[in-house]
Length: 79
Image (cartoon, rainbow, N blue to C red):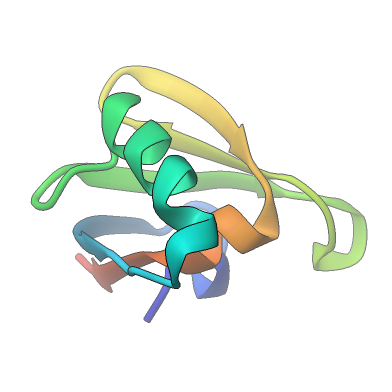
């Protein structure tokens, strides 16, 4: 399951960041730099209107807005 599929108010644990080819290597590194690391707990706070658009995510004590394509790269397990 990926982070885009999680409903708001659901907590999950990061399993890994998927490798989706050379174009995503930079994004993968950026996600890891801001805290999306294996074992880290995450929570979807809010999704865009009608489930489209940016997804507001809490990872650790920080909050980030991710694009849907970025959230799809993060594989998680629901806690």
